[in-house]
Length: 145
Ligand code: SF4
Image (tube, rainbow, N blue to C red):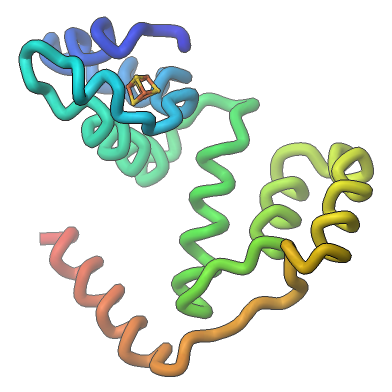
């Protein structure tokens, strides 16, 4: 983390939103909720981290070299098109965008997961995809207001 969660909260309070959004801290946060549970000021720090992640992706200001924002973007795209995530597809898309040669290194693990039935090619679509797309479109309109 380039800033501690405490410093990040202070930066937001102090109006340093851009610096907070570009911070690696929000992407390193594993959402364990320890800080939220322990915070003496009862700040919902983990929720703030999630909000910052969303804002950073929307503004495209996330730091380079951290694959998590790309993973989140690709997962969102797949869920928007199928209604479900597809593990193999999301990992492939992320690797192609962030570290294409790293795919070769990951291939044996992917193959092992596939053989054990822990990773599937393709992915299923939900039954009422039309309804979900309508819901997502409604959310986007609400966000735009
Ligand atoms: S949620 Fe966990 S990982 Fe994230 S900032 Fe708080 S303590 Fe750190």
